[in-house]
Image (cartoon, rainbow, N blue to C red; front, side, top):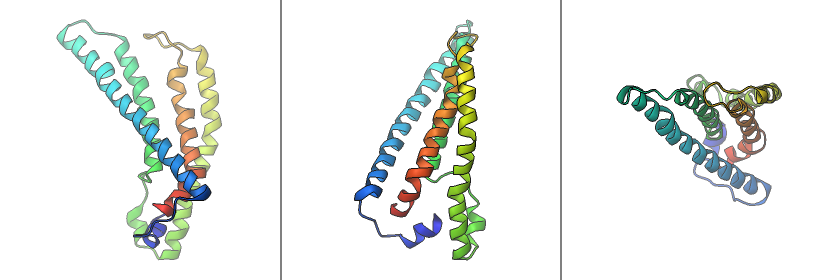
Length: 176
C-alpha cells in the first residue's frame, strides 16, 4: 500500500460508484467502532479500574466483580482496537525493510500485506465462532453472566477485520 500511497499522493479519487460507497461504509464502520472503543475506555477506567481500586484501597471493601468486568472490557477493547488499527493501516509492518526495496518488490510485499492477514483472519474466524458458541453455557464466577459476553469479542472482532480487509480496505487504500 505504500507504493499506492506514493503514486496517489496529492490526488484524490472521486467518491462515486461502488468504490465510493465502500469508502463511505468503511468510514461509517470505523466511526462506529471508534465510538464503541472510546466508550469501552471510559467504562474500563470508571467501572473496571477506578471503582475496583477505590473500593479496595480507600473503602477497604473490595468489589469482587470489578476485576472480571475489567477483563471482559479489556478483551473487547483489544479486539476493537485491532479493527481500528487494521482499518487505518496502522498494524505492525516491516516498513524500514520495505522502504529499502525496489518499487516492484515493494508492490509485491504490499499485496502480501493485504493477503496474509486476510488468510489468517479467514482461518481463525470459524474456530473463534465455535469457541464463543461453546462458552454460552459457561457463566462467569463473580458477575454470574454468560461467558459469551467475553468470548464473542473474538468472532465479532475477527469478522469486522475480515470485512474491512476483504471488501473495503484494498479499495480505500488507493483513494486515501
